[in-house]
Length: 123
Image (cartoon, rainbow, N blue to C red):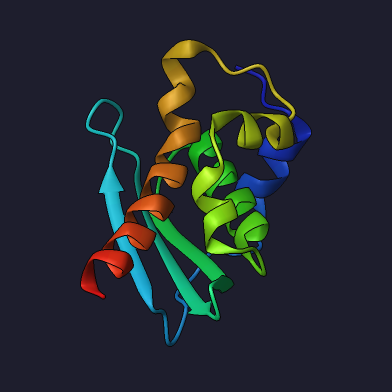
């Protein structure tokens, strides 16, 4: 499969890969069908996502999606981030993703929403 330049670049040189010191929200999940594993770490402030990082062991599509999601989330209101769907990531990935690979795109989004839900549930 040929990847878009966005996927190739974000996979080879992710900008937001690593641990986030002082994270307020952390969540990890696995796609059991392919083995992709992603952990999202968020620092929250005043109803917004102040910073975001990710770690994981995943395919190029999933890693690129997680990197883009972390970039998108920084400085955004939590309510806006919770409203994002797959199309928000697909547009930025600039690629035609087969239906069988959509879980690779959406796993980071599900993990971010899980992190935010865990914080809300703890309050």
